Image (cartoon, rainbow, N blue to C red; front, side, top):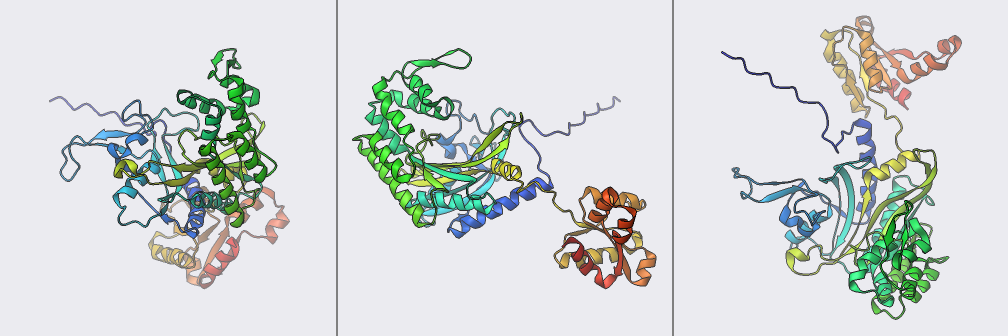
Length: 493
């Protein structure tokens, strides 16, 4: 009888575009998100956790790639499974936290308060080509107000975003929330007599203002320009006169909000929609000042043009202004860590009624990288106190020690490997980052004492101290069993 062929062993590797997060990474992210959540909670926002899976129908136009149905998301078709959905239905992993909010706001519209204020934090999935720093699973952190057309909601989001950045440790002066308005740009396009079929091209070109400057954008709006490689980039085809209001919009930033708003009023000319946008920005500036959010924290800035193709009113982004060294040792500003704005159509496709909404999304991984760059995260996280095992028949005694430490709020564990080699237990404690090891053999047990080994001090002594210093600062002390908790607390501070 032929033997079955041996199945090949699976490869122990993560799929491309995915990664694993270990203790310190998870702890740092959780701590950062907890601080942000506290700020959102204080502002009256409620947490929301939605299913990781949505119907493709519910995602609808929010799909990342509308030209390729179901592309950009991880989607599959339902089979006839007992208790499952209808066979043939398409389901997908959520690709952001906004599309699920649209479904929730429509599904529970008779039960939720209006406006509905929620924040959400969790993983999302994109079925896109991975690359350096670009993963197919990542975290998002959103806060949105659904059902309010008042720009007070936008002002509150901006002020709350500034509070959140400070709550995680970004100093005032190291960040700036910058605010603009799509309606102002619509007014500028109207003043420039830009045709509807040219509008999207104009948006794309002004988005390059930071990169190519005034003259570069002027060329892109009119006759075109050569890029760095010498290739020809076609222009939109505006005249220089038409490009004038657009450039005036991009260069409208003044010495303060009042000057900027005056310049924007001039840029929109006689456009009614443009004037409405300027007025909304004026209201936001006034409300931020009333909230105690000064212009060194949040400011009107027409240079914020990213996302203007999507948002319908105020737009904002949070930029970190401190410098870091890039991979080539060059100084550069850290850049944007959050963005958002006002958008329509969130719930309309479910209910047929327009429901105004505004919100912000913080780039979790990017903000955490910024904290590490500032030395506010990335420090070694202390591991648990390790209770070593000298006699496996006395495991209950060791578990009792660990339980006493935990009851006092001290992280602790009993070594559960093979206790035969004591050196391996100390190596384990070192790998765990343990600050202290507890040792009690039969002799110590009879005398009612334990040995408390300060592993941090021991490592320091081994690396730096002289023999005399080593004798005067022993890293291992003997204390009564009843004093174990007090001694450990003294060592770990």
